[in-house]
Structures are given as structure tokens and as C-alpha cells.
Image (cartoon, rainbow over all chains, first blue to last red; front, side, top):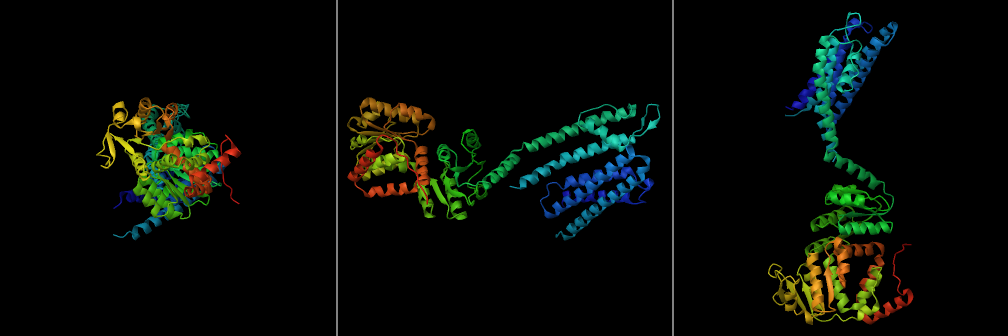
Amino acid sequence: MNSEKVFFAFFILLAATLNFGFFIGALHDGGHHNVYELFAALVISLIATVMKFGDRTHMGAVLLATSLVADLQLIMAAFVWGYANSIAEPDQVRSLLASVVSMSGGALLANITSVVLLVIETVTVRR
Amino acid sequence: MNYVAFLIMRRLRAPLVTLIVIWAIATLGYVIIPGQDGEGQPVRMDFLHAFYFVSYMGTTIGFGEIPFAFTPAQRLWTLFTIYGTVIGWFYSIGALVNILRDQSLMNLIHRVRFRHDVQDLKDPFYLVCGYGLTGSNLVAELAEHGVQTVVVDIDPLRIEALELDNHPFDVPRLCADASDPDVLQDAGIQHPCCKGVLCLTNDDHANLYVAIASKLLAPERLVISRVSSREYAANMASFGTDHIIDPFETFADYLTNAIVSPFHQLVYNWLASPIHRSIESAHQNRHGRWIICGYGRLGKALQKRFEQHGLRTVIIEPDPEARQVSEDYHVVTGWGTEAVTLLEADIRNSVGIVAGTPDDANNLSIVMTARELKQGIYTVARQNRQTNARLFRAAKVDFIMDPSVIIAQRIMFLIKTPLLMQFLDRLTGETEAWCEQLLRQIESIVGEREVESWSFTG
């Protein structure tokens, strides 16, 4: 067992599940989307990315790429959330919230890709 | 070499994860802990303000409490997070700076820069392995003639010395083991502009490695190597090293020539070195008994040649058994620096003395003592260190043997005027009278001015 891989699997799966939890719900309904979940998804996703730093394998490099995509989407989502919350006019908030959720949907896709790659890597391990 | 980059990324993991976790916990704390606005109404910080506050607190910038003055609960949390974030920040920055100052990273950066510098070379260049006395002499002289060089040396001090040496153009340099084929590859051994490889390290085995690697990676490349033992010379010759230079053998040839066939030697001297001696110097009689102090590499090479030409010799050696001096030779045990030993070697009936020990002070002392005992004795001294050149000149030694100069001069010859080298090799077939006539002819044209030679290719 490679403890490094276990830690990474934990973080990437956690990022994907948190991301999913935030994403699910009606697009415009703020009550369906918890900002703490977005925050947790972003933090965990960042940690998962750092965990893939310095991996020489091809799979490691691809996982770093997918995880960076998720980070990018989530950071954008967080920015838009902050803008919507503190700066934007009240009538803009609905559409901004929709874009936050859709961006987290993009991040979810990247996270799912990571998980799929992880599963492929795991099943190809020969004992 | 690329593994260093991965290693550094890997080492960044711990500090980055620490930073992310500390920042996340601190931010979350400010969002959860309720505050109060100006009118005493409860208010929650949102993530934007919380992250803003943590960012400037953690990096020790500190703009104050925003958007409203903190409640005691918020201040309590701030107390914890100040220490947490600042420690985390310092640890991460410290780790990052450590990684950037890491020697292996610096080496990697230098290596990459070196590789690019070499790849970008457009002019023909020579690859010089070993930047000792010989290497530095040669690089300076080649630079003077507008020839580009690339230098590899294992000793960081010598690479620093190269940085300080003021050459008219940039010399790409790398501190690495030249016997590593990857290093040779980066140094441009297969570069289309590489004209030749010069193996000048003070380690015969390293030279052998470089020579054999060059011959395998680029068989058509010119390879010139210095050696200090006959076994290595034979070894290098066996796989086609183009020129092998042993400074002691070369000098022994030179000196023997000067004694046995002075005009041959004078032709060589005139064509090789800018400041030449007069024709009259060839008439000086040097046939007779010679004293050789020190039976090392130089002593052995001289003894062999003197014997071939029937010159009588006396060897002065402090430890004849360890040096395996043959029983047939006339040996005096001692240093040769004191009058007693020199008198025992019968200096009064000798024409010349060779101070060939590996110590410059001893060599100078031998020369001075010998002169005191016999006026006008022909003196030959081996100069081991470049810094002592001034002393040897002041001592007015007739023949100074400086290994690094000999090698550098010979290699310059081979690079600059290969045909001249062939001419000088052919010279051995000619008589002394022929050489004297040649010298008279040259003298009638150039007079006292120096003879400069160069080559053209059509």
C-alpha cells in the first residue's frame, strides 16, 4: 500500500463529493447551495492539487492537470460569490449565483475525471 | 537531472499544505464567530472579508479590525490565528527560500543555462575539460586568437576563477565531472560547431574517460589529451586519440635536442615561441657530464634520452630505492640543495644541471648553489607553480620547464598551425647544417623581429 496514494484518493474523493453537494439543487435558488460547502470544496481541492506536486508518472501529471482545472473553476466561483455577496446590485445576485453554481458544475466534471482516472490507476495495479 | 525539479516540487508539498490548512481554518473562524456593527447589531463576516483579514494578518501586514471593531470573541480568535498564521507563513517562506538556495537546484539551473549557451553557439569552438593552469593558459590564448571555447571543470573554485578571468567573449562554463557522458553531451560534443575536445584535467583517468567518450560519441572529432604516465598514453593511442601530450616527455625531447642537435631545436624555438634566442646560442657547448636532481617523471625521461645519446649523467635523489633507480647509474643520495651533495656529484666537472624536483624552492636553491660552485654551468629548472614564474626569471635559469606552458603551447600549435607541426616533425630527417642554413635564411628576412605563423584554409 502506498500511503501517498491513499491520502490523495481521500482528498480527491472528498473534493468531488463536497463539490457535488454544493452543485446539486436548483440553479437560482440560494437556499440549495451552501457557501461553507463551496469553501470546503475549494480548500480540499487545493490540498489535493498540492499532493500531486512532483509526481513523475504520466498518470500523476494528468491528475495534476485535472485537479488544477477544478481549482481554477472553484476559485472563479468563489470570486463571483464574493462579488455577488458584497459588491453587486441586488437584482444581479440571481444570475451571479447561477454562474457560481454552473462553474462549480464545471469543477465537478474535472473532479469526476480525476476520480475516474484514480479508479483506472487502482484497478491496473498488479500485485 | 530533471528529477531535481520533481524533488523540489515534492518538497514544496508540506509547506503549501500547511499554509492552505492554516489559512482555511483561520478564515472559517472569522465567518463563524459573530461580530457587532456600529449600532451593536450582531453581524457575520462573509468569506470575502474574512479571507481579506486573514491574508493581511497572516502576512504580518495588519491594516486593523474591519469592517467593524472586533468583539472580544473575535479578538480571542485573532490571538490564536495571529500565532498560527504567522508561524505557518514563516515556515513556508523559510522552506521556499531553503529550496531556492538548495545546491542541487542551483546546479540544475546552471546546467540548463549552460546547455542553452552551448546550443546557441554559432562559431566553431573547442571543448576544454579541466581549467587548471594549462586550461586557463590555453583558453586565454585561444580567446586572443578569437577562438571560442567551452569549459568544464569539476572544481567550483576554478569555475569561479574563470568567471573572474576577463575574456573578450563569454565562455560557457559548467562545474561538473567531465567524465560523465551526459555532461559531455550538454557541453556540445555532438554540436556541429565543435572542432575538438581538449582533455586537460590533472587526472589521467578522467582524461581517458573524456577521450574515449568523445571518440565513441563523435568519432570524427579531434581529441587532444595530456597524460602524465606512459600506460595511459599507450591506452589513449590504442583507440585513436589524435594527439597525446606528456609534458615531461615533451620537455625531455626539447632539452635533449638542445644539447645534441642545437640547430634543430633552434628552428623549433624560432617558429614556436615569439621571443627567440640568437643563432650564436646554438654554438654553446653542452656536451659533457650532466647532473639530474630528482629522479621523478622528468628525471626518468631525461635519463632515458641522455643515455641514448651517450651523455654521461649523475643522478641526485634523496630516496633512490623508492624511485627504483637502476644500479648501473651513478647515484648520489641527497637533495642537491646543499653544496656537499653537489660536490660529491662532482659538479666542477659537469656542464649542466637539471633541477627537476616537484618543489620550486628546492629547484631554485639547487640552481643558486650550483652557480656558486661552478661559474657558467648550464642550468635547467622545473617550474611547478605559475605564481613562481617571477622568481625563476629573476634566477636567470637558462632553461625553464613549465609543464602547463609546454602543453598549452603545443596544443595552440596543433590548433592554430597543424601544418607547421608536420613540418617540425619532418625536420628530424634533416641534418644540422641544413637547419643552420634555414635559420640564416629566416634571419636574413626577419632579422630580430618575432616570427608569427598562422594557417589558411581555402
